[in-house]
Length: 472
Length: 138
Image (cartoon, rainbow over all chains, first blue to last red; front, side, top):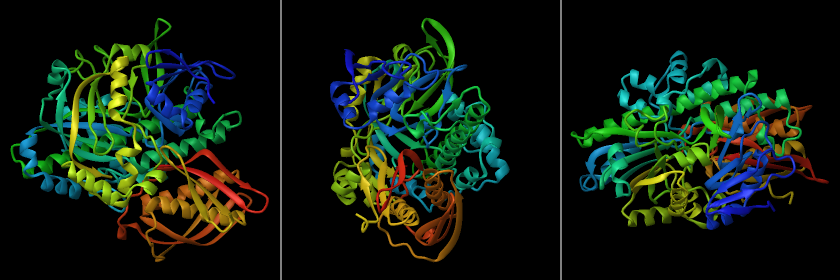
């Protein structure tokens, strides 16, 4: 049992004991903490606190649950000289991320053609397995994509500049070096540009159900009853292989003796291997940005065919599995640190240079997907997040129970029927597997969002409700 | 216990299983079958394509990790979907196996397995039977 004490409203502390270098801090309500106590979340928060060069605290945000090595919903910042970088702190799906598109279409107009739209998008955007991309790319071009991310795809003619300008890191993390990506990783990824993948990935057509902050919503271009589209996917096989390759390389170089979990393997940030991992991770992250850019283009094409007058713009695109070099205030001093966010979203307050110019004054958009069939949220970043969580907040509802249990207890067909009854159109490659992603297997998004809003690590702007879902 | 090839255990986010076998080879084969079931459920896959695979590892865990990862690679890079392992030999950290399967393009399913992890992984001999435990990132 991990010792944990309530130190404030929605704030819990795991005191520094044993080999912990800093305390653990968990930002959650009583209900959410109770769920975390049921698995190894808190133990994992504690393990991360033992890693070299960790600054201030090992953090878990409200949607945290057990992962491998680091928990999901985990945030940790490391000192650039003494600290480490860990592939397990980023996750296998490097730059698993969420992009929100807005349209000039109202819910009413969409409903008339709901079925047609969902079917067209399902046909156009490959999902599941055995459905490789229609986008053929040479090895040489792939290298350019790994460096250029979403911008590369736009330059190829698939999108407009505003698309990547409204993406975290302008759609390409600097420092990417394709030479650091293995042949194996390239072979896994080369046929997958522009594919959703599977698991919890999805494409969803939604509408703005409620606005909580008029001014910010206006800046983001959101209004009630407007149709939006959310794309959730990552770096596919390429990213998974990059993570796996560097976990092995780091094991060989540094061994795993003394680590509480083999998945916590890491390398000093300023070591050769640490720098190489970062360069490869950046490539995978850029693959994910490019992936969503191509999907965005295809969505536009299909929607234009059905609604000739439609306009589709990118609201924003946020990473939730990533390591970044960012400036933060540590003990009153501004310094550059390496922030790991695994199942956590950046949530910067006003004025940060990382935020697109047109949003900078009102702060950074934070896109929080709900579980299948439930609401999603647009939040906005805050100064408070910069003070409490290295500018981070939650990434979604967070799982509550296992896929094994969901498959055992629930039936995909039944879930589809229940979604249909709520007016939500569903398309998937594998109806049985729908059970894995049933809303019952996730935490309540309303509770998660309520807590982060109350804490002030991100504030509510708008609630989006689903109209059509394409499951990867 | 030994009669059962593998069983799935509770894990909040990912898929955790234990596989069993009288020999190390058998526990490896059964681990691959558990991975296969995670990838495509109980779908019947034909044995139309043969693949020879070779992997190495510096301990049993890393050997199992590399072995299971090979199937994720073959699926993404070569559209190869495993049905069964026809022959397998493990000597001094080196594994050779003959695998039978089919083109994934012929099947409709959603693979949710992203990666093999070292999280809570073990391969051990428990008196008579061998047991492995693996968490797959899905």
